[in-house]
Image 1 (spheres, one colour):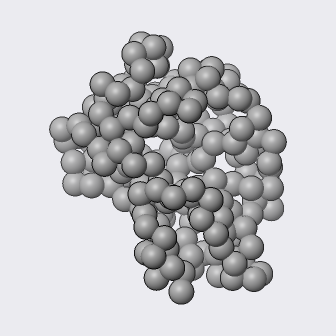
Image 2 (spheres, rainbow, N blue to C red; image 1 turned 180 degrees about the horizontal axis):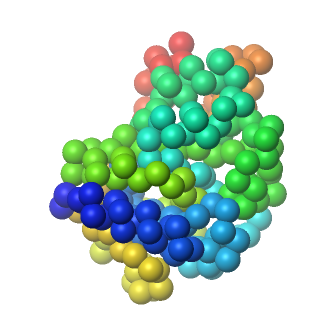
Length: 205
């Protein structure tokens, strides 16, 4: 099911007014809200049944927006972002500017970053200009949602917008730790996922 420019505009409006959305990404269905809106973040965490001290990722809908927003990123780390993104990875980055503190929770020195690689059916979402706090649309510890029907009914009923992007791959993002990449060129995979480790090796050398 292809999404439209109207869907992207509706998602942007939802986030802008403090709403919570269920939306399709390039891996699984997610929940999204404004990462700087404390009330929206608290509500999202309650829906997710997620501990408030557990960090979440910030998603930008294009790499251009992410790089512009995170101008303090060093050249080596920036090169790694350009090699890995957009794609099915979540990158753990140093956060010296202490950006998006609600998403970082009890680890303000680390920022989780997502930039999806939008498939053709979801390409319209690439026009969304708002970054979002994003987490998978399942109860904490539950099965990842490949289809909208896999998203728990109570989540769909208590969010402000639900976008149906059809069936997704269903494997969550690979989490890659780049916090020591700038100084030592060190990286590690924290959670295997949608992008194979060998492809991360190829991208990062």
